[in-house]
Length: 155
Image 1: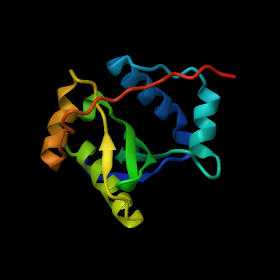
Image 2: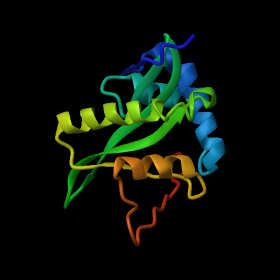
Image 3: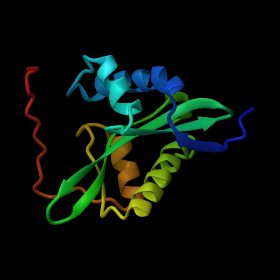
């Protein structure tokens, strides 16, 4: 029986297989990009200094979710958190929405401690679950804003 206690912690190297599984699930849902270099991702997440960080959600010592983040800088706003991925195992979704809000609460604490001005993220236009969570958190969709990505070939 689940106690429903969510523990949020920083990812460890032992979590990398779960991170890969989550990345695959998120990528399949959005179909914008596909991970082609697993070793690069491992290095980016677990080298010092890391290029991005991951927090892990556990319930009863089982990894059930994660959020991956890094920073971006805008001249008018300063440094901000960019949440590139958030994933919760299907069995743990819709449990009064307690895993994703716990991950977001931790991201908010991290951003406030660093004195970053915003937490930003994007979601697939057809994915209503993150849209609903975003609204509950009080986040606003940016009007007249389109995100572009320019793929650069390996040199």
